[in-house]
Length: 262
View 1 (cartoon, rainbow, N blue to C red):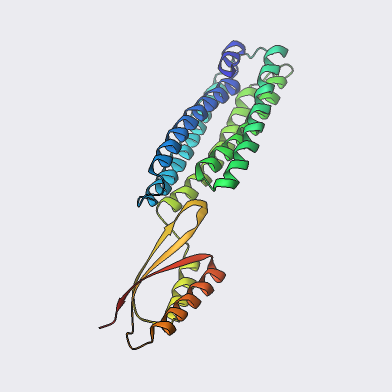
View 2 (tube, rainbow, N blue to C red):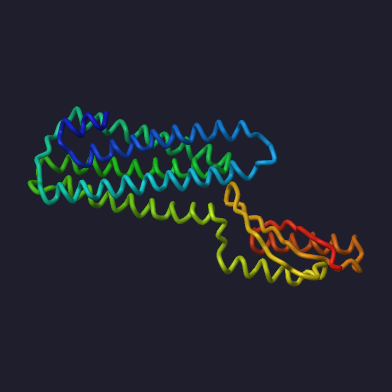
């Protein structure tokens, strides 16, 4: 409907917004397909595969938002250089206004289920729906102002909206790429290493591998050896205490992979 309206009134903002919504529809289809695939895996040993797959999909969806922003900016700058008339219509205004409320409904729907599931994909779709509400509202303002302003207000608003899209997409890209690559900030890593080094049950620390799962839950797999001269009960107590203190200080869950110190 937006594409029809945008082409009918010759508005760059409206038809670019329509392309953005088309990308959203394709993203939702991809998300649905991924969800079905994840559910088929169930609680198998491949638990990490759906988590990383979801993070990859969230990153790709963010990339789609960024691509739409770049395309939007290019079209708006082209319209700014070569102005063309835009024809205002109350009927078309009301049609586009209706889509704002649809996106607002989707925003709250995605937020509700994102809180329940901790899904990164739903968070991206939630953020995208929120951005769409702002974009379409600005588009309607631009569309209305074309009735009274002679310069290319449609193109100016298009440039502003594309900048808004690109900033939001860049933040999402960085966030989900860090999760996909299990990137943990240096401060947290130093605190975790300090806490582990203070554990008396460990004789030698080999390496720490981080894993960022659903809901940004971070797990540190600690590969180390323990002193066999330490009683098992005392060792287990020390490990539990270290894990508890580390979680309290950093929010990182520890998982120990231990070998006996020969």
